[in-house]
Image 1: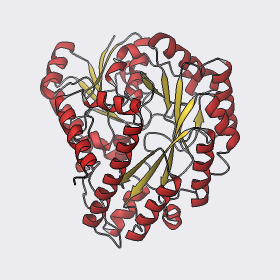
Image 2: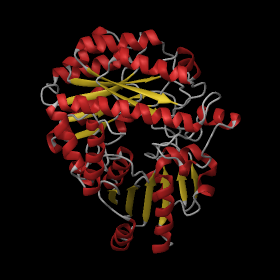
Image 3: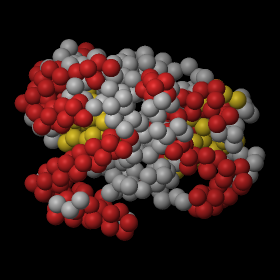
Image 4: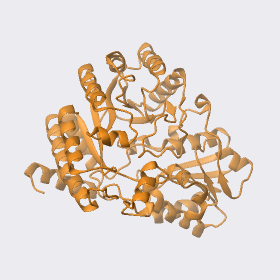
Length: 458
């Protein structure tokens, strides 16, 4: 039997109103579940949610004495992951360090050279690799395991590995406790900004019956009251979606459980019939990736959608009674002051219940990163220095400073909009206040931000 410590590192961000993790990392929970079912011992730590500092992590390693430490990371966690690897080797050089997740997968063959304190890098999905690493006693190297073909073979996540109450759930607030669920892996679309390094672009679907089994189990055992389908596109396969929604309804899982999902706006993928069925099944909110209000910009991103389709999808969703969230990106190649204004105009026309304008992020290995490097438009070269709330790029017509100024001003507009919606919605206001009370630091930052919005102070 091996002892495995699985870690979700913190990020170096300190600019959020709420200093908490939204959802547990489903990947390491699945790995922990697979290990436990095979007779091994697994311990899962989310360093931010579990409030584990580096000194505390040192003590945990000394006390737990793991044979293996597994670290999953996205690009924003790369810097702290490096520190964790160094700490593990300082405590005990014989502990095997395994890294995986989107960032190492994007680095590919360069992953171990980039993180010299790691022994093994798993490129892609790690579900089928973890037992091979332990049972075959692989000491070092880069592994390229095959993607999981039969997703139904994966176990139902063992939530005893975590404390679900430590996670705040995503914004906007919904029923708690809330948990993330995956109905599919892979995305057939090819948006230039999207990192698909850890998953293949071939769509693989869990059977609706298998998903229903998981929903029932997690609701009955852990009282989960909301599931967020984190699939890249929930509505990419209409037959599958219809079957799943009908099973939710026929099993009565729409009565005490709420759902939300990410969907695409394509006319062939969304219509009144689908939205009506989603509403009946308990789906109360849909996230749509809008990205831009300019058609040329959308085309350059390979979004494969039109402005007409965007407006149509929001209109139909609003008519169905399902709330909407629109996501835009600022700073993609070709961005100008005019295209930004067009995005703001589209936001006003859509009138979504919630909206976000994020800065363009050149994740390693994406088409966006390659284009920016070719043009010399990448402002910060080292991905480990990427910060979410900081402009990382420039465009042909706009400097990074100008893009940042636009992002800040739009952020104020969005914050004001959110504040006004909170004032009108007591449940949302109460949820936000509860999240901010999780730490003194968060409370102070949150109250200061809300006070500035309420008083119109910049």
